[in-house]
Length: 210
Length: 210
DNA sequence: CGGGCGCTTGACGGCAATCAATCGTAGTGG
DNA sequence: CCACTACGATTGATTGCCGTCAAGCGCCCG
Image (cartoon, rainbow over all chains, first blue to last red):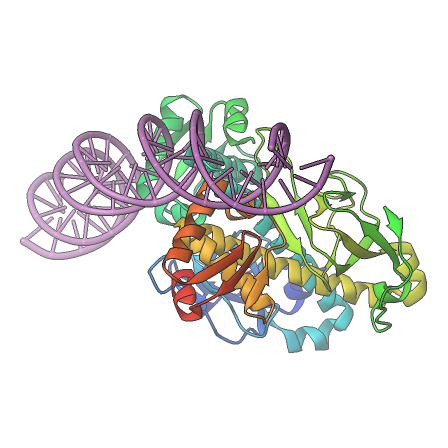
């Protein structure tokens, strides 16, 4: 982990104002499960996933975080999940103490509120995704979600098949099969296994719907 | 829906101070999906479930709320899910306006923060439950959760099999089979279909574990 | 006593997990 | 530059769990 100097700063945001930019390499751990949570992070570039290791090897994924997202807040004092870089990342980090000193309690509260609300909405969306029964619906929803997060037609997948599978509650083989299926029905097109393009948005929405 | 007079009030809580007690009969709707959310509720007695109706008939359950819980807050202005009484209920209701006038912004913010944090933790727990693959693990986790929420050994099930099934992402038949299975292995004992007792807590924890 | 409703049980089929092999791409060393 | 390796993704074959359909049971209430 190294520090970088040339980072765009948005002075309207508390973290952006006092945060320290840090770089993480792919697969590097940002914090571990169980560690004390005294830093708050804001994504500048790259993608991060939070996950928890379970005794039997299953690995539920909490969430993915993209540029602009704030993460690392916990309602308790310690991290219930670990955070890892899915790709090379640049992340601003700021301590609660420093933020209190720099911006005051009010601004810190607002920041925490926004991040928590976002986490809650994300968790709810994830829940409805998991309750959807069929594997194809889950995969379709996931791809659609990515596609509408970025406006573009061609979307880069930040994560590999295993991470998708963990997030969707499926196996990597099933995810792969569903993707193949979506492709052969002409709904999406994978240029490479990490990059796809929506060919028939309406059909994709129908498959994702419910 | 009728109003009741003789309700215990806890004056340390904003809702308790100015809330209006309301009674709901079993299966009565407290608010509907899509309605404007300007009231906040606090359970006094009974149980409430929030759920969303989907086009194909599936009905994901958001959460169950028990005495003491606060619900009805939304991060947007309207209710994304409906709330219904699972049993006869008494609930305190207070409008945001009235709470602002009576307690001030600070106290309302604190209230919303606590309720939102609770919702988030609950959603995360629900997520790990759904990612658990096997039906028996889900049912075991659910029963264990209920058992540790109430300290007692004998637990009353507030909801029917259908609500359990919706919450667990299973069918009512599968839930029933798993319960039978748990019973015949001596882990729990159902005195009636709405009331059970944990016979071997350690075994139940093992089954729920992961 | 009879009807209705919710729960349980049974038989069967389908979908996704598992096991296993192959393919494709990227990275490495000759 | 090209083999060779390694790893992730895909595809195939088979198993097994859970959903579906259907019947039976128990309980409450009229």
